[in-house]
Image (cartoon, rainbow, N blue to C red; front, side, top):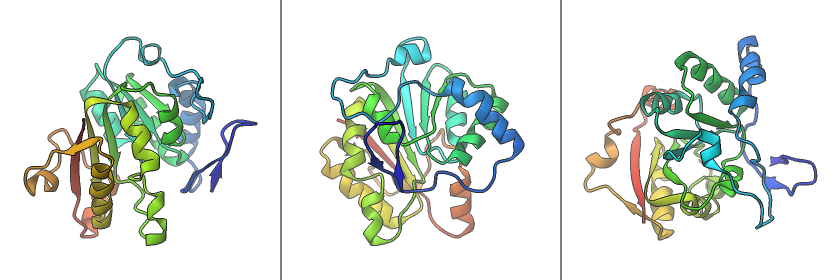
Length: 238
């Protein structure tokens, strides 16, 4: 599938679902009433190297630490982190509009105000983020693309890891959670091969046990019901 964000803009390939089953009336209302207020402006793919970069101080009102969640699914983790870290700004990227609608409902229920929601490709967000601007990044239960011929579509490839490394601060933490063993293999191979990250594991428990501030997502609960084992990988940007 291809995604074109603005008239006249260049094409960027995007693989994955944009919309699923019909939305409930409440979810349609969340999208109509809330997404515009929470969506950061100016996030489109632009090959112009002189394009304007995002002003995160304007987005969040001050120079706070900013975290990035790539593919927030139904939004459980993002809202959990926003509620527990009110002094941090959290940007979530998700092209699946049903997930965006679910997140917006959770934001309303939790009353969190330190979030920005990009209903689109995370690559577009990384295009406009300044270098060395993000203090923490999350990749939680990403699309596994199980067929070998589709492994190049996974997020843990240079196409995504290189821009991610650029926007992360030195010392920033990058967390990856997945229940797919082959995704663990590719993550370790590609992230460490980039030369930009150190894996912080010192023993098996470091990737078998969830983080202290973790909340299980709907995808993890489904994986556990089906007998798959979650893995939790923690990297630090050099």
